[in-house]
Amino acid sequence: PDATPGSYCHDSITIFVPDTGYVIASFDTLTLEQNQIVPYNVQFINTSIGGRIYSWRIYNETGELIYTSTLENPSYTFNDEGCYQIVLVAASKWSCRDTMIFNYLCVGVGIVENDFEKNISVMPNPAYDFINIVSKDNSDKIISVQLIDENGKELLGLKNNNKTHNYEQIKIGHIPNGFIYVKIITNKHVIVKKVVIMHK
Image (tube, rainbow, N blue to C red; front, side, top):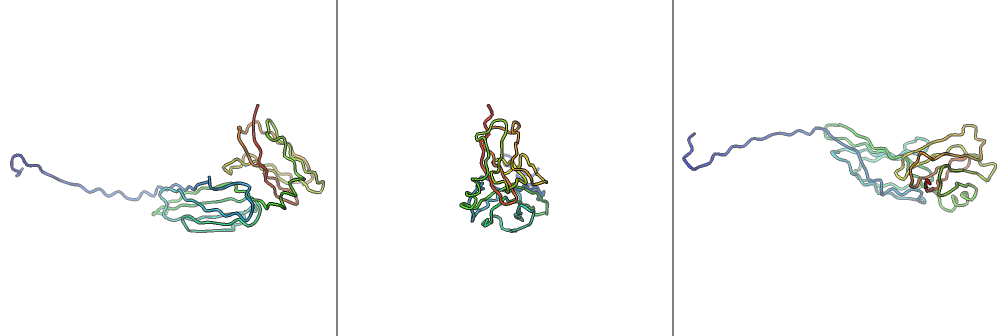
């Protein structure tokens, strides 16, 4: 009210916006290549939103915790064949948490596994309506079979508790076209094979 004619008045206001604790745990899965030969080193790339504190965990096939890290972008070398679950827990400044789980990253052992592959057939490939899994070694029984998509998500899991089968047939009509990994556990070995799904 005391301003002279033709002049302008200015004012300001300060708003404090607190940390809401919003957090999304995420990491780049495109760097995780399936069925690589051990030792296989992975550099994890953290893409979480709102995270301040991180906890990485890697579990083997039996659910045993084999690695932990609080680094933002750790690296790890897989030295043993098998399929691994990778977990990232991200926490905000106010301890709100979110978790991302990757199931599964599978790695192999090269020449030893290739010798075993001669005794295991996964056919047809490309597959249309079903997959046949046959063990040519009568002493090598199929214990379980998992179908895993390219992102590591389990599509189907079968267990043979009697451990007496050398043959499994799996219907795949519900799985979209693309490629999947077939993880086969026998009483002697673990093997992962890549199969193309191509419905007619």
